[in-house]
Amino acid sequence: METLHTATFAGGCFWCLEAVFERLRGVRQVVSGYTGGQDEKPDYGKVCGGETGHAEAIQITFDPSQIGYGDLLRIFFAFHDPTTKDRQGPDVGTQYRSAIFFDSPAQEAVARQVIASLSEAKVFPRPIVTEVAPLTHFHMAEAHHQGYYLRNPEQGYCQAVIAPKVAKLRSQLSELLSEDAQT
Image (cartoon, rainbow, N blue to C red):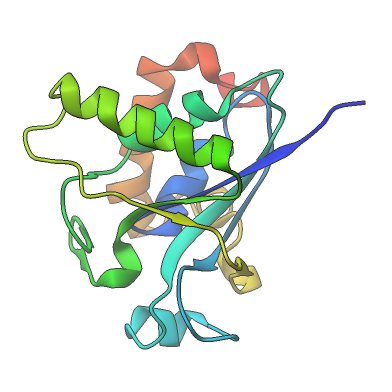
């Protein structure tokens, strides 16, 4: 019987991250939601308005025998800009911050080690500003946000912003794709 783990990341629009991570081998589920804020019942309108302190985030359920937490972090850093505070492209505000929400001391240690390695290697032209914080509560986003790219691949935002990320994943990291995502 497989033992599943979770990883929770924020890196701009949750639709973008969800579309990348749901294609990976060993990933069983990706849920879009909100975390890192104060409101006990956040919703898209309040979060996007910057009223709650939450970040748009994804929670990944994965099989660590097929893909490791460190691998997920490397993908996370490859698919957003961790050097801009409270911003990803045109999306601005704390709800679009770069953050890793850990659920164990082991996850925190791996996250900090990956950031240190990327910083030491000068992978990015500016310092990494990704927040590393304990996961308190993850709130699932409204149903119409779940699997957004899969259901709306022809929508303008999906074509302009998400499709290039999926293409990058296929061309640069095809060895990490699930069998379903390789076609």
